[in-house]
Image 1 (cartoon, rainbow, N blue to C red):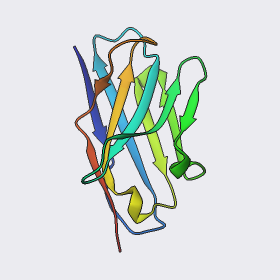
Image 2 (cartoon, rainbow, N blue to C red; image 1 turned 120 degrees about the vertical axis):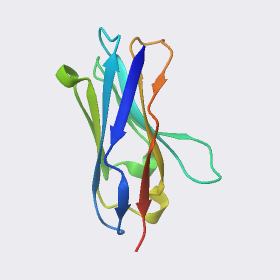
Image 3 (tube, helix red, strand yellow; image 1 turned 60 degrees about the vertical axis):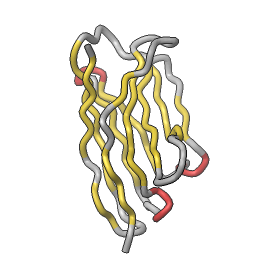
Amino acid sequence: QVQLVESGGGLVQPGGSLRLSCAASGSIFSIYAMGWYRQAPGKQRELVTTITSDGGLYYAESVKGRFTISRDNAKNTVYLQMNSLKPEDTAVYYCSIRTTKWGTPYWGQGTQVTVSS
C-alpha cells in the first residue's frame, strides 16, 4: 500500500509563485519516477513534469523555464516550484509515482492551484 499526500496549493496572483510538495509513504523500497500532472476544468489530465532516478527529466512546453521539479529521495518527497504563474496554470495538480520503470502509477488526491487577480 502506497499513500501520496500533496500540499502547497492555493490562490495566487498572476506572476506569483507556489511550491507544491508530495510525500510518499507505505510499502516503498525505492521510487523510479516522480511527477506532476494537472487537470483544468473541462480538460483532460495532462503531464506537467517528471523526474526519474536514472536522470530523466521532462517538462511540458507550457511550463518550461517557469516550473522546476526536484526530489528528496531520503524523504520520498517530490516538489514542484512554480514561478511566473499564469491564469492558464489554474488546475488541480496531482502527484504520481512509479516504483519501477514499467510499474503501475500511484496517485495523490490532488491539490487546487488557482491563478487569478
